Length: 65
Image (tube, rainbow, N blue to C red):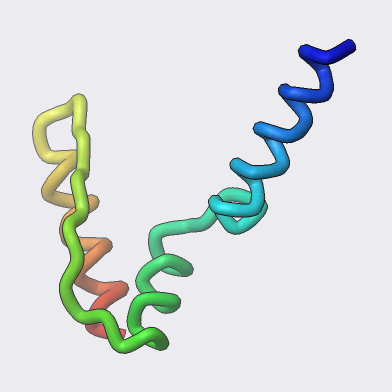
């Protein structure tokens, strides 16, 4: 029982700090733009040659909007 309470509290904290759910890259970029943040560190991990290039292109398009 105490472990379940601890797990519930930890999950509630994670959801609160993470915004409560999944966020797409486009949503994140829009939120940063609204906040006036133009530069931030972003790590893109790719497993197939060329996939990082396409992800970078998508991120750049989201910033340009």
